[in-house]
Length: 320
Image 1 (cartoon, one colour):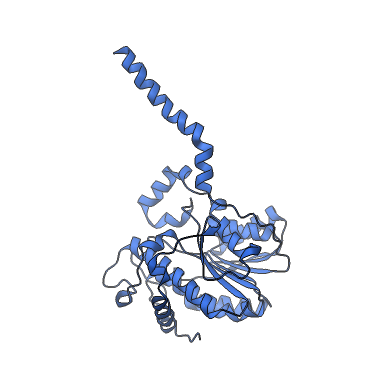
Image 2 (spheres, rainbow, N blue to C red):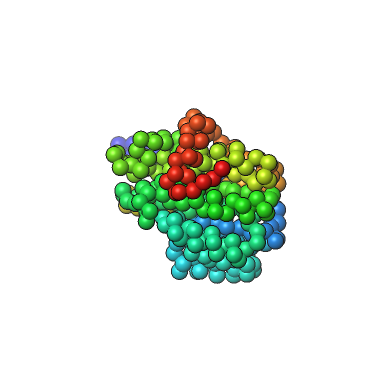
């Protein structure tokens, strides 16, 4: 009996010991790819939505460190100003600014774009990073379901309003943050706003699929302009994105060591924004700084074209 107890204790001790020994390998696997480009961005202008925290903030820090003039386009100006000051201090780059942008309000999007076009003569990199996740059913100021309205339609409108400046500044790049969750998404044109049937997990997946399809159609329409558009999956990152779900919030904090840090999560966004080898690559989807598999739904050109047309109708714009 004593021998059995000793053996059991030895097993229990060996489990955390094994995890401790394997920890460096586990962390390396979780971290994923790293952007190895040393490209400098002096003289380049960058706009990053949702850059006051998490992945967006670390993307902004990296690009500011490369010398870019970086605009943090954020809803919460208190956090945005604090983030801008912190990035200025850590990078030594004083060309980092916070500007008001609420993607849940088309009036705010238009005001941001109007002010940007008045103040900035160039735009070389647009990173559509901001997003919401697992929201209870709710609507934006304009009556759009929140996931679709912020994650897709808000960035669709912002890109539309800034696209000519991007073309004028070519070569230029657009980076859209999607997610592995797009594999579970479906564009339900008969119930695009989730009014008939709503599930917040599926709503998030649908919006991330919309990001993929938007990128695909946008890349086709930008051929020959010198502007590229690519989508990225940042990985499962320890951030504030799960704040709308108390269960997911608790789980991410319990298992934070199995998640990417915001710095690690920002690597693919940075890669798509600066890597020299991607200068002419467009319409692709990346994860861990490498091409990744897109779901069959995300490769459907007819769905992409129809979603484009419906998005224009909902926003009241004409984008040829």
